[in-house]
Length: 407
Image 1 (cartoon, helix red, strand yellow):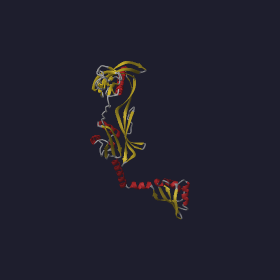
Image 2 (cartoon, helix red, strand yellow):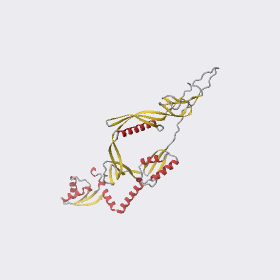
Image 3 (tube, rainbow, N blue to C red):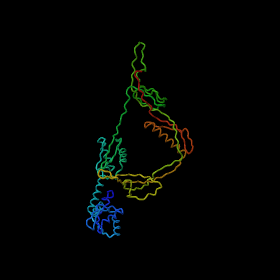
Image 4 (cartoon, rainbow, N blue to C red):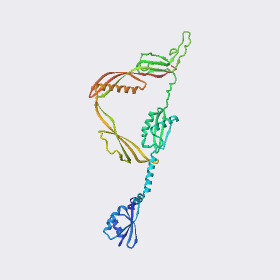
């Protein structure tokens, strides 16, 4: 039975053999490795049986050396069904058009759903999507990828903190997160404001508490800048009549104290360096990907670039709600230039200064400001410039220190 498995897909025919002892012909076929089944004798000099379609030519060759006559009768299996179907042009055309219509409709956006945000922001997102060409009835291959849509929405709608874009079949799902401004909660209870680092006081703006330093004073970490103890000395006592002094009042010291601070930094910059840049020249190629195989559709030759940066945008093709193992691929081939450059020592020092300032700015945060810098020392060794810097900055150095009222 194993020999005839799959015969429907490969096709098989029923042959009638006529001659003296016709069953011997089928025996001869079996000896040649040809599968024969359902053999039966229909007359004294005639037998019939089934053979595979791809064995027909071999059977014709065997018959030439014998005196048997062969007649091909029933043709069965998928190849014959397909052949009969292809001969019916009207039905074939209708089937092709139906499949093409289903594929077309399966790759059109029918619905865009936005969730997770208030109604006003949802309307802004919908309006912005319309400007990108993303709406019901849009051709899926004409719009940007979900990752690019997500990036554009966050940039164009300030109220959005994050948005997720997901495509499922013919529907685009967008889930947004609104920016929520969380006001910093004040520390409970009385407190001092103390210095977090050494510096020289530049500006003071105190809204609560007693200032303990003045502009141009030098402070070190831990020094009290604004006291949370008001209305007298820190300790109570008795006056000359033996009566207690007025009790101290404790408040939450509050204010902004900006100081000039200083930092030392060290950076090393090479004199020779390699760069890569995309020139702007590019060509596009289009493919149909089936599994791991890509079939070119347009753009068959490679551009005449020394180096190429390739960027693929792949769009899967859907059939109803199912994603087929077939995708439309747009490949962008951009000209890439590799350049080896050399900078002067002065240029290296300037780059080192900017690099050190940028690194310090990231470390201090957006509220700090770098006001000056000075190159203390620079050396050149093994094609590299080593720069030592002294940098001045202005920043808020105040930090909360809770007070213990029992002291």
